[in-house]
Length: 196
Image (tube, rainbow, N blue to C red; front, side, top):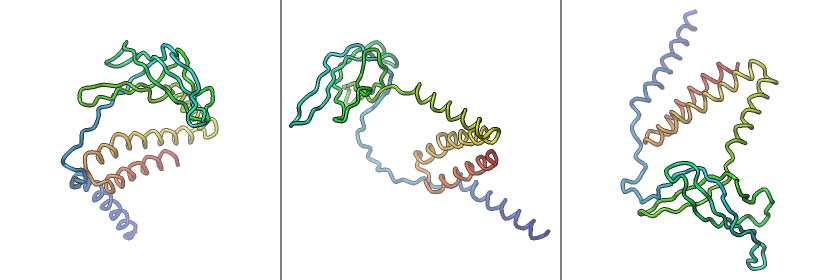
């Protein structure tokens, strides 16, 4: 009985040391103090308003699908503004990769030295991602029942810990190894409890 108590107290002390080291961890100053000029990127949604050109270019014997489109920015500070973008498709192009009028896209506004340029980053796929996530969640519940639900809940809590604790602490300059260990400990505690 005394040995069990000693092991229990050792585990508590170990956990206390790990958690308290979070507050006393020195900042890792790996970043250079002279910050380079980094262009400011802002993201918004856009919609293809018009296809100006849709052709195939012949570049040194290779067929390169090419589109020039006019895009309207539909969210953010530049809502309502239009820009033109040249969109070159991969050589192994499939028709679904082409842009069509009315299609939603992710727009990037790059600002450097006071001048702004707009680009199409990619197609707007968030609704599809939400459907995939909901399908995964539903399949976990159907096949896993209550354990599937709690495992998915543990996955969500793990993601919250990573996004709200681990990444901000590392970006703030704290020790990545220590922060990852502490974050991993909390993820393990929640995930093991919820999944088993």
